[in-house]
Figure 1: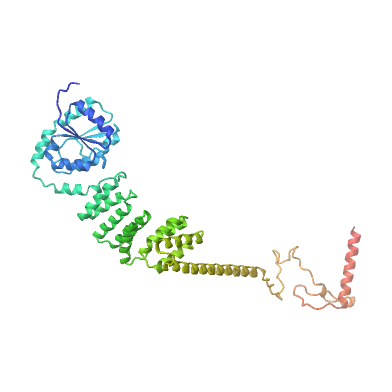
Figure 2: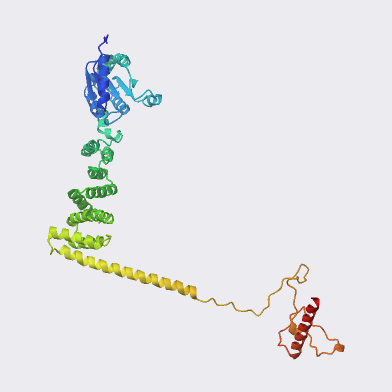
Length: 448
């Protein structure tokens, strides 16, 4: 393809080697022969800031993703520099999606280019941006005396603007250490937070967080991060660092020993040999009496305490000899713990038996009958005061008149409206009952 114009140099920023190579080929075919490639946005920003006139004399092509930031973030960062406000920036997007274009509209890019693009499209974009080079050079010359300390400070605090990148936690850790040296506590905290994504340097990053919070004068947060760092060092087997941090915590009055915490977790998980290693490394942090008592306590937590005890006694014998005072302290405390545990179990068994017997006695206790009352129950009356059929008043047989009374004497019938006092039946009463029963039987017999 014959080129009618030779374009100025191009600075190509990309995070991937394959798109970088393709873009280089297209830019070269479009008419540009001087191409410089970079992958880190921070490095490119410093490169442009160190030579504002040179930056204004080249076209910067920025891909959507860089190694340490996005292309949108890079454009925003560059426009913050007072002497880089006019340099041509071409932002390459992954697609022609209108939503993506609107999202990056205010980032400061001079023009946008969507993939896939042809050589002719790239040539047209470069031609448009070339016309802005001369004004950018004049603007850079005019503002050459402007103080750029604000931009330098922004680059120093760049880590607080970046998105988390799990592929480069070591870089975040280095940036955090630099911020600590410069006493930029907030930037250090932001950098160390991103460095924690790597388990290899998690403890170091947490220790850096503690230093940053100490610089801010927050003692409570500093102690919290020291404890986390110590736990991480113990978990990954960095014994020397763990002992150093624990010594600092002990000097501040903290009594929680991360070695014992980790060993307890390992024992409950059934990793006895790992627990033995952790406990042996804890000997430098406590006295032998405390170590023996704590080891015996942890042995009782194991599913097979005798096996854990054998592992520990063997490790103590290999390191300190069979006649070590620690071994004797361990066995004595283990015996005491076993005795205390058996006593607790026996006491708990007795309490369960006692509670069971109390429940049995409670269910077998006879219920006392309610006392009888001398008053007779009051019968319900009908609607007009007349007894209902079901509740018809039955006269007392014992209160019937005696048959010995003469018929001519016109005996007075008893008053059934008032309660009749109870009395024992006499001979006449019994004969009356027999007669009435006989009459009732005969009546029923004739009815059949």
